[in-house]
Image 1 (cartoon, rainbow, N blue to C red):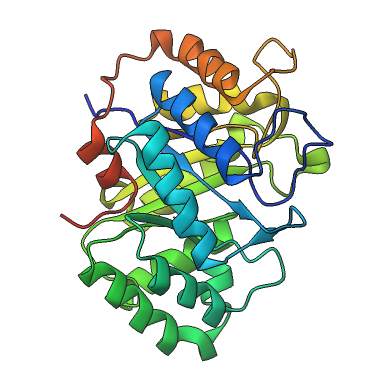
Image 2: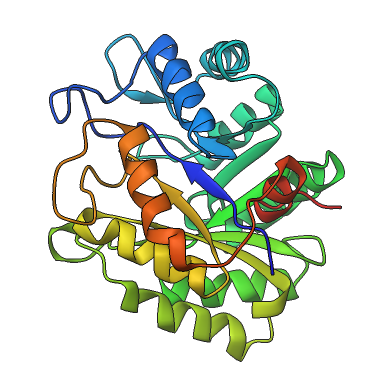
Length: 277
């Protein structure tokens, strides 16, 4: 049975403490939460950093500071994934520059943001080849069947190097009210299977809204990995509003009680997140 990787996304790019008092946006608060969820059973964290105004940023120095703070609080076993999420502000060149400057062990990248069109193919391919040589765990964010089809095409063209790849499907991102459903996963997996990529792709799910926990339990039962946290939802499976990221993790672990998969170790988690081995 494949080991299960559980990742926590404690903050995200858009939500603020006005949305939830325990949403961490400072480096210190984020590091404390990362330590809490690691102690609670998470093998990895997906971290955004904020500027002095609390806005999402790709500032490499802030990412380096956050990485050091998280290591101090949580130790070296926790896998730390940064992100290049553009939020409509950052160009492909700025996204690439951040990753080259930080040189993280793991990064999530929205394929449609880093390679938005054919004109961006050459620069994107060079970047992905560099990240592959560096042994970086690269996870591709895919929001739809159409983006999954494009991912498969870029793999076939060699733009995305390697024999295996890692993707994450954010369920409910473009649904009415950003409320996800586990059923959204079916056409995404069918697309990978149709193109012969399902067995060559490590896939993870995050999910917006009140169905976050059941969506992740369904993903785990089907062989996928789980990402939970305040970036996507504040709500437990029973509809109650969680007080913390640690509570969301505990809620997920209760839901996973009937899924017979062993807990991933650090190497398992890095492999699931796209590290070439």
